Length: 287
Image 1 (cartoon, helix red, strand yellow):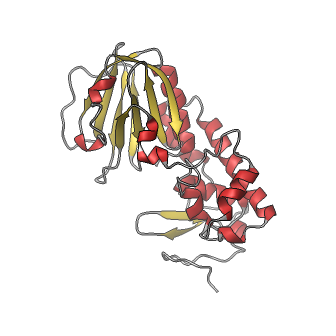
Image 2: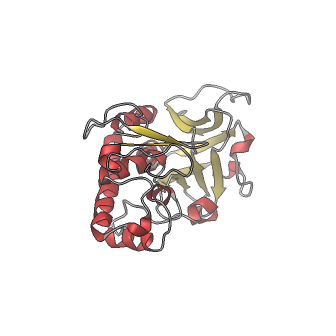
Image 3: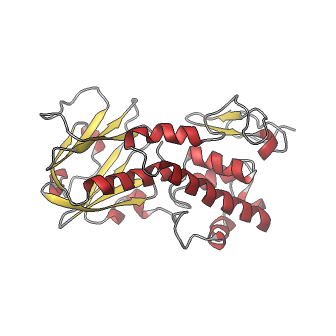
């Protein structure tokens, strides 16, 4: 799933390629992708793109005098830029193509979604706050005013595990499964450590890991073409998706805890005092 660093890079890429250009056609291929109907999708046609923003994991195309085109790529969605779009309208079918946006130059982009769970979402709204997922977002962890005190305040009233807290978009916007693993590895903390048990020193460590991990990931992604962002993300991960490989910090074997629809990776030596976590939904440290 694209997370804050990749969506930030896509935002910069689209700002460079879209701003100042007119959207001439928006072609839905998979009707399920449309989550709003008023204004209609065609309401953005004939309008110039004036800005591209990011709200957590949401992309927001702002048009001059028209509505916003807001997109959430979900778990298996992606954006493919084309300097010249194919001629003719795409045909609905069983392929991954979900939506096509064409500019007056002949360039544009496709939104695709792999797999059978169709969660890619496109909204046409007058204000991005009309999108429920945007309205519920917590603060952006890379915002200038997101300091250590802000993080401490957010976590103060929580009674859950760190992994779940970091992934909660209503608490902190933009962090998902992969970067929560990376942040906790950098902070040397168990994913199942209760938020209520954090000391002031641990909060400092978590804050520094959060900002550093995301900032470095954004810098790695900056300037990378949209089609190469997935590979760039994977190359920069130290533990997530690397089960069975050596930890780059201590050399211990990276381990995994599996759930029904996801998994997490961690280093026992760096994060859990050398103790493996039980691989079950309500995992606890093995005695």
